[in-house]
Amino acid sequence: MHFHFDFSARQILWTLTFASQLVLLVVLIGRDRARRYPWFTASIALFAVGLMADILLSGRMAAVPFNETLLTLANLSVIVSLLVLIEVAWQAFAQVSRAQWIANTLGLLIVAGGILAVWGPWPVRSQMALDTLLGKLKLMQLLAQKGNTLADLLAVGVMVLVALFGSRFKAGWRSHTQMIAIGLSTVAISSLAVQGTIQHIVRTVHPQSQAEYERILDLINKLGNASKAVYIAVLVWWIIWLWCDEPGAETTQPEETP
Image 1 (cartoon, rainbow, N blue to C red):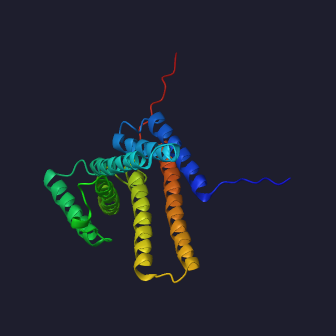
Image 2 (image 1 turned 135 degrees about the horizontal axis):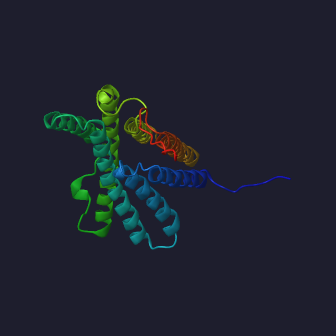
Image 3 (image 1 turned 30 degrees about the vertical axis):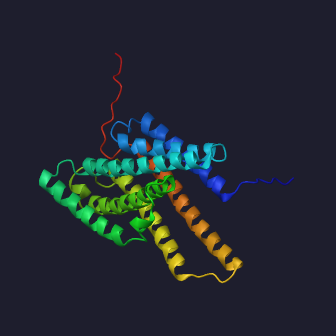
């Protein structure tokens, strides 16, 4: 007997991602991690809502309101992602003085902002037609794309700081804060690598036939799937580490009844 499962790679990755997010939310709430990392918990929940909106509303809603909904969620996700980074940095370096906080924050923003300024093409403002609905949607898309890139760059920067100095404060090895930072930076590096590769392909490869064009699209699709697979692996990483207690965590033993 032969079984045939007509599932595409996109459907499989979507299912695994959504299921992993639900399990992670259960761990965060059930193990009382959500109280310590509320913005991180909110980011996972918001991502899950975005996945549900994409699959449930696609084909059931007109194109314009559908895109408005997804872009609104995408821009909200950027804001929450930045708040997650602040939360992780605060958990790791709560004991750092205000002057050091300001200096490190400005340093990260300058470095990340400089990279973002030269990262990928930027549209010409005069060609965006912001007085039209299409122009406004394009602006929302641009903010989501560049905002995600900025968040990725900052995530790598925060991870470098946590790796170098976290053990001196509250983010030593195997701490929940460091495990979250490692996961965020892994997803960020994967996303940046895929973006950079796709931009290189677009700039340098010029297909001469329909077959070559389709091969390029297939390669880009595979790169996107690989990035999604990395995110699933990171979700599993978070599930495992956030389920476990941190080293040295106090455990309350039930009192014995006489």
